[in-house]
Length: 323
Image (cartoon, rainbow, N blue to C red; front, side, top):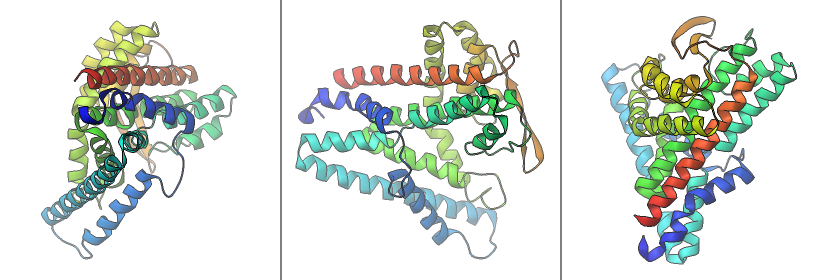
């Protein structure tokens, strides 16, 4: 990368964050992640068996979708970056910044969280329930302020890893191709990585890939949230203890490292009963219920998310500058 200029390349993470802060995550059919979603649907429609087949074949067809999507996105982004590099340093770094920008979602997370926070502060619980249903899969009818806050906090915390730290991490390791290919893998998990009748075996490879990709970034997020808690004068020691104690209680091998740490920092309890199509599902508690969950905790979580993002981007830029 030295021939393309180390300093500009080291600034790409911050440039991507600035663009995200100014523009956000535009809702467009031409957004690269939307196009990745269409690509996933195309390969799924081509490979999902038209007739009943055994579970092993379903798993292998799902592996085929994962392979084809990752290869398609990897090749296309490589070709585009190669053309940009031939056009000049400015074009290369501009495209690198754009690819990283579309791979991260801090403003979208903050927007969703703050919309629910503001609705709760205004006492508009019914609309807050409806807005929460846009970002979670659980039933939201009948939830009170505490449960709405819990669902929002869990989403913002867990997606700090999936939507921010992981793409930044893979940009550090593999450049802009790493960030966008990670986003493709994560999008596959969100589309086909479910434990239902259709995807239990077909989507298993996508779900396991997402677990593997987020393994290290989730633990990095744990450390970043502890630092963020210290800066915000929250209980960073308790964040450290609860994050370590309760992370493995989460059904995901990675999600608990963000959620439990946030719970510890704020002395609240996450987890509990969620309902899906009217059926209860219990998720182990994380944290201690020293305080009742309320809207203010959403805002604090968003501050922790932004601080963790800035800290990691700063560290990443230093590594890229002197690597």
